[in-house]
Length: 208
Image (cartoon, rainbow, N blue to C red; front, side, top):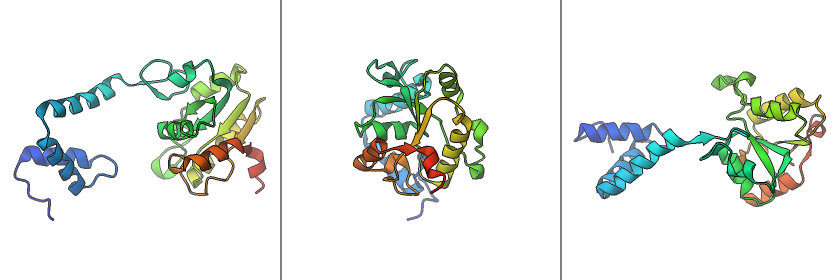
């Protein structure tokens, strides 16, 4: 099926916008656009407005850099969470994956990325300022490095270990129940939960 000819310029423009989303090809984009065309105009307007509201009103937690509707996210604001234990993750998907295990009761720090020279992301691009402040204030007892077990994730884990190893904190990492090469957000809940519970000192992995 060729998508080179469109009967409408508006249709073509919409397909182009949808196909710019990750994992969405031109054929899938066309199906999505045609689906929207079949919907009631109020439903489509609500759909569009929800995206606009998301972009205009979303916030990033001033404590952990997690996506939030408020200045401080629900996790950081929860008085029942252990504020001295911080789980360092790459993105919001990883926070959601770990929360779904119901095995972690500390708080998070979202880096917003991992070191990846191929993508032009170096250590300076990581969001560590908020984490630095907490560590300097002596608020942190344990830092869990919970990044994907890819080369980029391991490189970032090692960078963070070297950055904070002189501080009076325990630095741990997930047990290798998460297979090498796996991304945290795609790990099943049972495996990820066990990897959290059985986490090990990061330095023990340096000789393995």
